[in-house]
Length: 112
Image 1 (cartoon, one colour):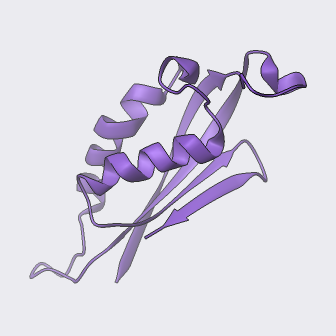
Image 2 (spheres, helix red, strand yellow):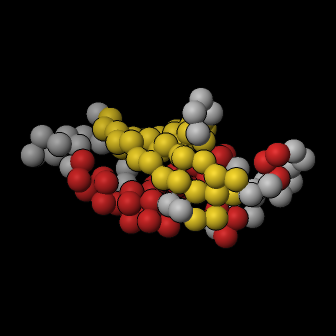
């Protein structure tokens, strides 16, 4: 069974290997969808939504929200950010997928 939750954070970045507007510092409101896959436990839940929120906030949101992502990534593309999020959460949860929207209409998805 799959269970998901949506998160939001704001961050800035610039693309170092890019020629165009995105080579200048700019910001986005990111939307992050995290999907966990597991069996239901004895309490009927795959994971408590509050536990999922706590883990994602501590591991991801608290680090990236209102940051300059160039402080964390050499090349802070949506692809690199999504992969880092997937890897970080895979150490803590049974992650099925991570989907990261950079603003409206642009996204990257990584699945197990």
